[in-house]
Image (cartoon, rainbow, N blue to C red):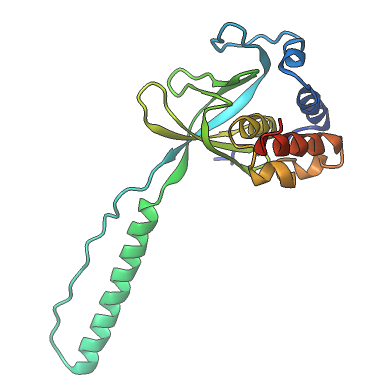
Length: 222
C-alpha cells in the first residue's frame, strides 16, 4: 500500500488571495467580493468567500484506563523470587503505561469534504460528519500546524462540548477569523505564528494589521 500523499501547502497565489480577504476593513467590503458557489446551506445575508477541500478530525476524549494488575505467586529460592517479582513488576509497568496511553484523548480522522468559509463562519459538508460553527462561538481555538485549525465549541443542537480540527490550506484564514471574534487576546494573533513560514516574507503588512486589530479588540478599543 502506498502512503497517502502529503496535504498540499498554501501557494503564493492562495496566500495573496487570503491576504486580500484579511485586508478588508469592514464587513461591507467582504460582501462586495465576487460571488462564490457553495454546497453549504447559508443563512440570509451570509456570503461564501471560498470553498476548498478539507479533512475533519474529531477529538476523542480521555476514558478510564483499562488496567488490571497481575499478582505473582511464586515459590523457590530468594534470588529466584526476587527475579520473578522484578519481571512481574516490569510487566505490570508496561501494561499500565499501555493502558494509560490508550486512555488519552486523540484526534481521529473521520471525514473529508468541501469546507466553505463565509462572512459568518465555516461549513464542512459531509453526508454524516457535517459541521458548522460561527466565528463568535469558539470557547477555544488554535493552530497545531500551518494547515491544521482546531476549535472547541458548544454544540447548539444538544449542548455538548465538541472539539474539531480541520486540515486545510485555509487554516490561517479560519484561525484569524475565529480568534479575532472569540479570542482577540490569543497569543498566536500577536506573534504571527498563524502565518505559514514559506510565505511569511509576502505581504508582511497583513500580519501586522491582524495584530493591531486584535490588540484593539482585546483592549476594548475596537
